[in-house]
Length: 324
Image (tube, rainbow, N blue to C red):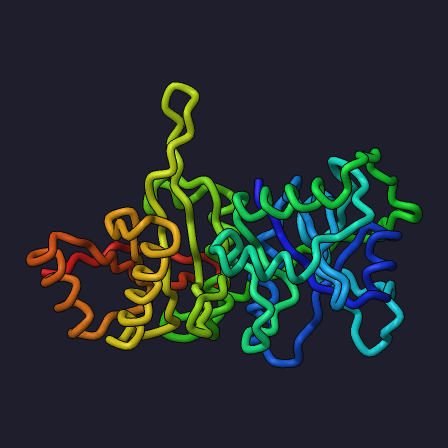
């Protein structure tokens, strides 16, 4: 199970909760559209859904129903934008009339209890996947703000799409590459949702993509690794992944190492061995290969290098590169 915060205006929020549907924009530029698709594809059935309504706060709680889909039926009042990348949802847990205020959210952010949700305008996202630990904090505040528990309210006028077209991930490119990083991200999200990469990345519990960081950059992918021992869940590792369409340079490697350092400080009490950094690219610069080799030899720490290749414009093959 995952959790998401969806951004919307006050007017559109009323439509969303009355119809049980939410949609993301259709950007004009392909690179931007690829990122929007990568984001919406991270929503899985039964994921928790919160809404951030501008100037009002965070409302909850709902649960995603079915897979994301493409649909251009007019629902919202803005006829300039159809918001065609959609999910449907239903109420869960209870009806919480009083939202979590932005002040409370910022306080959680300052304490490091909420970090995957950020209203920094640099990113301009409409949808954020957050960790379940963050979702529990938001639910705690909803329960605090609504001490008298009320049962969930049914969706008044549920939207039933006449068709639910599959959202396409476009892998076509040249030289075994995708055209834009967002498509590679979307492919990874689809594969992670299906559990297809466990042999390569290890057994994981949660996966997030396009995660905001403290230095105005977006972490492409983030995973948590939890093992259950005698019914006890033990969180023992985090993975951060940097994606590059073509050649990974020393600047890309430096970016990945900043993510590693941030996660070690923020989530692992400084234990860098809990962080698994992975760089995925079509090919790697020589200095990247040299650094990975020297780090393994001198520091006994690993930066994993994984090469990807698009085959037949329909699938991606991954291969681990061992520095020699």
